[in-house]
Image 1 (cartoon, rainbow over the protein chains, first blue to last red):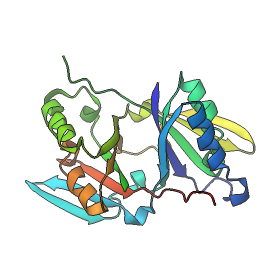
Image 2 (image 1 turned 135 degrees about the vertical axis):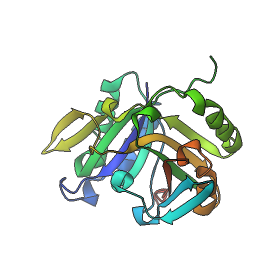
Image 3 (image 1 turned 30 degrees about the vertical axis):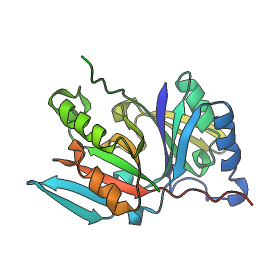
Length: 113
Length: 113
């Protein structure tokens, strides 16, 4: 099962402690086990650009349009045997403790009927 | 530089089989193929799983991180020079027509020294 794992900041979580941030070890484990296919941290939300097509034209604005992506700090793409393996792996992501992780199952797009 | 593009959905119809959008999506995918490093349609937010660690306990809940009347329906990674080019390509995604796309640059961690 493939997941996009979205890393959120969560103001209700405990304060971030760099000494407890073992993100390098976490990524390495996922690569070694071949369950973490790619991932990255994202630039601050203020640098977001939003695009909409309205009446044939394109409107581009600075910042997110609404709060949907406001707290997103990063992402990972996981290929796991099942949801339990994905839960176990992301529960050890430092941001599971200092934020929250949302696992979104991928929905394959079929172009051949 | 890789940029992440979130396709924001706000109607349940966007979470159904592609139907008439199929050709437009296929045309967009063909256009961005040289720079698209990953992309996925995501299952609806009700199929999400959120993982948090609080006080040393792993807390797993179903449903999205934040209940909202909008949600991330698609996720793509575009490898282009500068966010303006990423936005230009993102704006041509069919999801920007009547909806919107939000683009953020990635922020890779520095290699350990």
